Image 1 (cartoon, protein in one colour):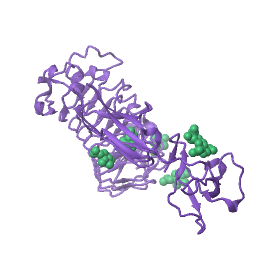
Image 2 (tube, rainbow, N blue to C red):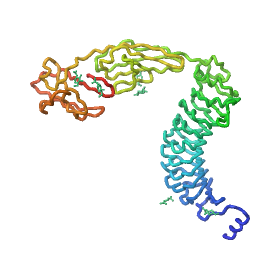
Image 3 (tube, protein in one colour):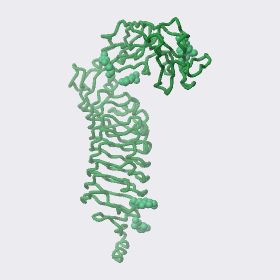
Image 4 (cartoon, rainbow, N blue to C red):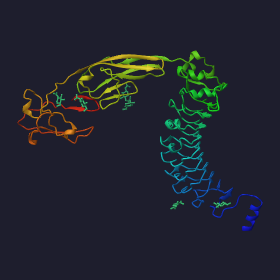
Length: 467
Ligand SMILES: *[C@@H]1O[C@H](CO)[C@@H](O)[C@H](O)[C@H]1NC(C)=O
Ligand SMILES: *[C@@H]1O[C@H](CO)[C@@H](O)[C@H](O)[C@H]1NC(C)=O
Ligand SMILES: *[C@@H]1O[C@H](CO)[C@@H](O)[C@H](O)[C@H]1NC(C)=O
Ligand SMILES: *[C@@H]1O[C@H](CO)[C@@H](O)[C@H](O)[C@H]1NC(C)=O
Ligand SMILES: *[C@@H]1O[C@H](CO)[C@@H](O)[C@H](O)[C@H]1NC(C)=O
Ligand SMILES: *[C@@H]1O[C@H](CO)[C@@H](O)[C@H](O)[C@H]1NC(C)=O
């Protein structure tokens, strides 16, 4: 054997059969880099005895189900890894952690349901990531984090993706090819392609996109492609097979000079099924918002909840915002919730909520407003006092003073001299940012308790709340 090898090498064939080679595999020491080739050998798992110095590893067309942390451990020189056409449904986190030289990872035609945040951890030099024809339903926001700047080719076509970590895609500034066709994408975040100057191929065919975010990069996809420069290559861009909503928001796309593909409009009704490139520019119209229903007046007891409704039509669907009587935009807080359907819930009203709330419905074509008059029936605001006798005029029960957390929630009023513990009628303890335990005792000699009033100041709301 030795002599035969010597002979082969003498004839200039720069490969040798390597001693340690997993059963069924062929191992070649080709121009000093080791290749381990085990395609379609009926393997059920990654052979444990692969030479860790291997540079190319082909395991395609087997029956591997699971990838574990030991499978590729210490393969720091591996450049090419093919796992295509297996039945891989699970990759243990950090399985590729040692593959710092890997440039190309083929995982296509497997059964992967998702890519977790640590599935692809460690692939700091990855250029080609091929994961088409899997069952991907989700990709973690952090999944691509280790190779954002090196990746050139990302193929996620033929999966079940509803979304993508668009923020990560946006940072892949060396991307040449992005294949997202045959998924369930219904949304692409605006600005995703802004920095992808090297993108030469973008396939969005057969998704559920109703619109595309306008971006200068799409100008490079025009038939003339006059704008193409060595720094900005012409873009091959496909988006057929999407239910495009042909309104004014897609006018920019219609204005591109492209060869007539077979893209069609999915809506609005009148344009459904029409060939996108045959619809005239004037037909790409939007409708300004029209408020169809809203609450007119509300009378609310202070501390109680109030629901303000506002509904609007328009094309595109208007977004609804609320402005409070003090001219501030209302957002979600501990006291308020703003829903996408236009409803504003004030969970606990205060006297500051008295006045006119404005509902603003806005879309690309304009805006409309409506006002809701809110009247708050104020509760009697009791004076600060911790002792029963200090508020003799009141028919109501005790009320504690400020319960600022910095005072340990002892319950005694701000400026008042602290009283000895037994005289405290109300005790506040266990104060957290969202809760407090309030305790008081009722003695038989005291007048009957008719009502409790709780007064607190939550830093989120910057307002005193009475209940
Ligand atoms: C491959 O061959 C070279 C010499 O041709 C040798 O130095 C190297 O150790 C071999 N590698 C392996 C993994 O056998
Ligand atoms: C990887 O290398 C470490 C340290 O050299 C060793 O302990 C470990 O057994 C190796 N793992 C494999 C799978 O070769
Ligand atoms: C407020 O929270 C609700 C869920 O409680 C959410 O549906 C809504 O989008 C949020 N609104 C804003 C403006 O963040
Ligand atoms: C709006 O959505 C919220 C939360 O999903 C729901 O409680 C409320 O009833 C809805 N309002 C209307 C008018 O549909
Ligand atoms: C109670 O005391 C706090 C601080 O000591 C003060 O800010 C608040 O206005 C007082 N409340 C009333 C109703 O007097
Ligand atoms: C409530 O607390 C916040 C933060 O501590 C403070 O800025 C605000 O002035 C207080 N409001 C009232 C009415 O005491």
